[in-house]
Image (cartoon, rainbow, N blue to C red; front, side, top):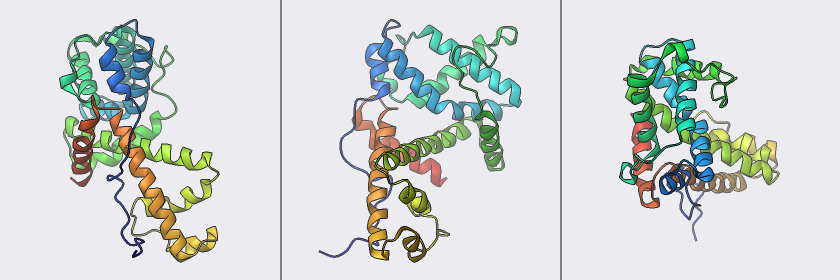
Length: 250
């Protein structure tokens, strides 16, 4: 069989099964007394608050106001825990989250009762400075608030998949491998040549290419799992992946 070293799989082309999704748990429960649904919703919100921050900043709010708005929004959302109005046909957590934020900004935000940082759910934390840097890096693109939200969402999905990949390799004692090969995983043309990386890791170029191939395949599987957690049913995963690819290529 011919070697496949030069035909590395796309991180968007993983395969296999994935566990029950957080969003499907929330949709199936739609009950404020269901602790599992509440926990699933909170985990999703903690993972994806950064695109909402970008939306609020692009909408014209300054840094401090954006932080307070997002903090207050999540406090309100998670305190109510009432998802009876959410229909599975709406499908995607990203759409639900943005629609909920827009409703909050238009109808429910009261500056006098803003929940300041340090409340029950601390979404805006030490990451805030880094998130503002991310926002500034995207500013020259001139995207609309909705467009920026969508792009930041796509990047957040990739980041979460990368985080899981690193945790997976670290748990197997392969932290050095994932650290050295991260640029090759992303297809960075400026990545350190295989021969040089192989010398650092004690691997031949052929063995290194195989390691990258396995890593990218695992990354694809994890990316599918991440996306699966944000759609209502497994059959929507491929459609969502295509949408994310378009956002990142645009």
